[in-house]
Image 1 (cartoon, rainbow, N blue to C red):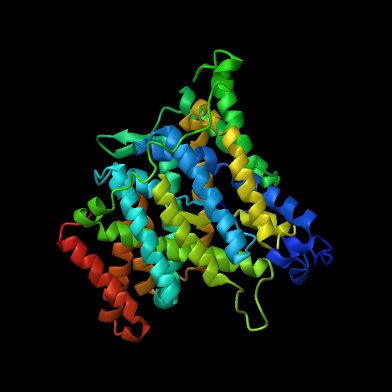
Image 2 (cartoon, rainbow, N blue to C red; image 1 turned 180 degrees about the vertical axis):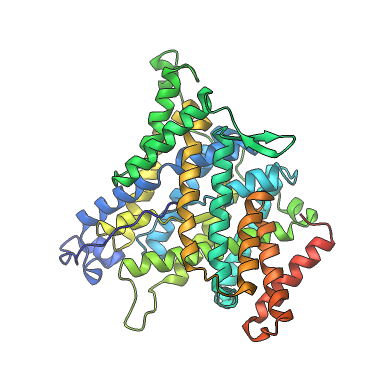
Length: 455
């Protein structure tokens, strides 16, 4: 996910809208009005709508039929975003998380050899675990127990993992028998198109153009047709004849028992732990910017927001997509004045309406979406500013977490080496007081998984 952000405007005038919306969203209490909330929702949708085209292509690489992946992406986003709006009254939209979708496709399915149905079963189980941890309050204990340096390292590592996949899909990085990887032929059409898309997206983002990533995808796809990299639609009827995407091939196709029998402990743990940290950090940041904290600094309805995301992840797996995350791109909508769930409701409605245009994904090549992965991954590197390099017992775990995620093509491996090395180094250097009990539990779980042959 990208780190789009800017200063927030002054307080909005009190709402004078209908009692119906006032009752649901408490507009006047948050100093909001209907017009501003809707405009904020449109803004948030424009900045995160690229997921409609990026996620199905990633899931399709894992073997999920493109049409069903497209439908699952949209319906899951609609369901959870509206749930976030009505249940938590948060101005935050939710969609399949960048990083976890790549981990699902390229590590769990293509790397581990699991079927996509089994992998969806693991996603569903992680949603159940996330929900239980949230409603029981254990979630907060886990988050508090993991040191801040590892939390930041996880974000940076996932960013590099996403960027590496983007470079691979752009054919800028290719396999090499001697050096494992090397630079692709950048004079070929594919890499040149990806470079064009990357520069276009970066330029538009630098100028704070709304929908920059979506515009880049569309522009690169059109250019790909012009230069003959992909064919033009033969006629307008080719586009007009495309029907709304169907869920028939993935609806409840997840294999929960297969995931349990396979013993995907590290996979489920990886999904769960990233959902915990990523969602909590994002929701806290967005809530503070939206002014949703009380006089004691407590965030209103935060537990409801996390519960909505956990339920949404279970629903997403049931539909045929991956774990859901709150997107940092919501900051753009909040900057336009979004303060209530009406902003999120607007995004949810727009996601639903996008079903009409979603079949255009068939005309989008991977080199058009690859630049988005590279940019999103690069922007996640901002977390590195929170990491102190003064203590060597922090530096090594941080380094292993960050570097092993892309090099092993696995978020789980990076997490495992980071947690284990942190715990061992602190113990051996007499810094036991810096280790929370949860670190012992997690480290031992990863060690057991390695012994049992987990990857």
